[in-house]
Length: 78
Image 1: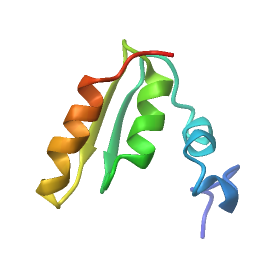
Image 2: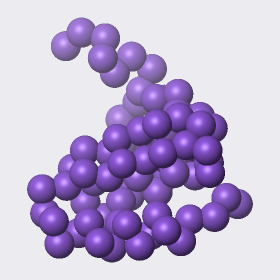
Image 3: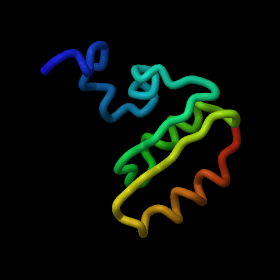
Image 4: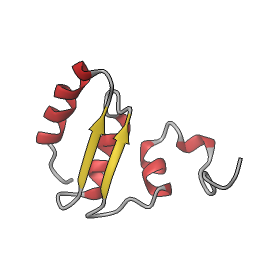
């Protein structure tokens, strides 16, 4: 299965902060969350990238996107 997931444990799958850390996402990063759904990982990525970063949430179910956009507009660094 190659080394695509080297250093990523199964426990990080449902732990968005661990997944973001394993991907080395940091302040100012640009990230795309493909098949974003409810934004579970996109929100964690947004916290990691901070106000200088960008997170694009993409999903085939267009009905989810307005909610994700509204979540993004309400983002403040904490």
